[in-house]
Image (cartoon, rainbow, N blue to C red; front, side, top):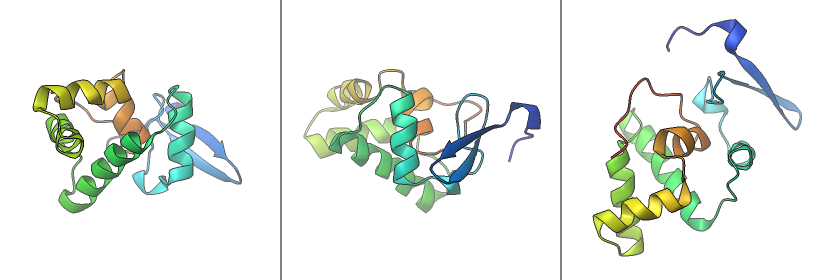
Length: 122
């Protein structure tokens, strides 16, 4: 885990539990994630989750669990393309319909990933 400044860790109250997030809203501990928290973070981002959002989020989380790292954005675009019967370009465009501020800024945050240091956005 990267060095965290405790003055930049924010407590987020969700029902009767307290969740720690960094100053930009990413989870400090990805194991705190659940679907209730996912909906709350999505609401903060102005996103009402649809089946396509959930499919994308579950793909990101499954990839993370299987490989020990979050998927590169292009894998997520390819997942959407395959699932929706689209070509690669259309899969990327569909992704940005779902998460208009992008892979790192919205999708990873909503999916409960820690904030990446650097990332390819495809």
